[in-house]
Image 1 (cartoon, rainbow, N blue to C red):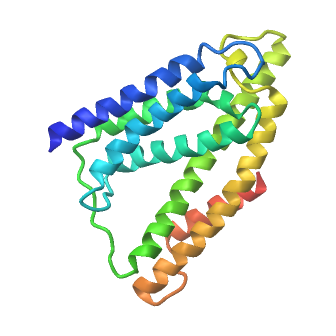
Image 2: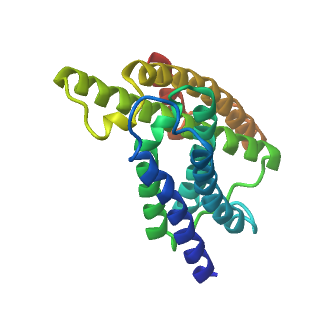
Amino acid sequence: TMETMTVLSLSALIALLPMAIRSLRIDGRDDAQRDAIFWMLVLVSFTGPLVLVIVAFAPGWRTGLAAALWVTVVATIGIYALVAAMAREGWRLAGLLYPYLILLGVIAIIWQGQAGQPMAGEAPTQWIYLHIGFSLTTYAVLTLAAVSGVCAFLQERALKAKKETALTRTLPSLSAAETLEVRLLELTAIILLLGLTTGMAVQYFESGVLLVVNHKTLFSLATLLIVAIL
């Protein structure tokens, strides 16, 4: 029901707040903040939106804006957790990432009543879901690459001004942010290429044509080209 979805949406939004607050209170350059409390808050921030997505998508895949935004939030936090575990300063992206995710959550709640469009149904389900999975992963990784780029920009400005700010003290160092940006862009290009391949498979099963030149195809190819150049 609409009441249930409203409660779950607000709960999902609230679940993001503790991690956002903690990320803005981080200071210093040591790794002590990536402790058990950090991972617990990441888990809470992931579980809240995930429960909402599971309930919302239980009857079938939804295509409305609110549903798409919450799925994006879940995917982005999942990829962020991997980056935080694998990259020494990757966890510091939270200072910019979580306020952005909260903004997405607020927009999703505002647009909650929007009706989605039905999915085209000729392609095998596994191909559709595989394509959706690659698309979501691409967006999540690209989001983290963009956040890394903003971190690098802010750190560069702080170095030129020879003055740290409360925000830059919570973010990755300039060299770490630049490294993360490049590595994440490389990963984005690979995943986007796989997504385009599965998209062509879906198109083939729907129409018998491997590649249809339309606005979606042109935007996807342009995105791949831009990411590759960057």
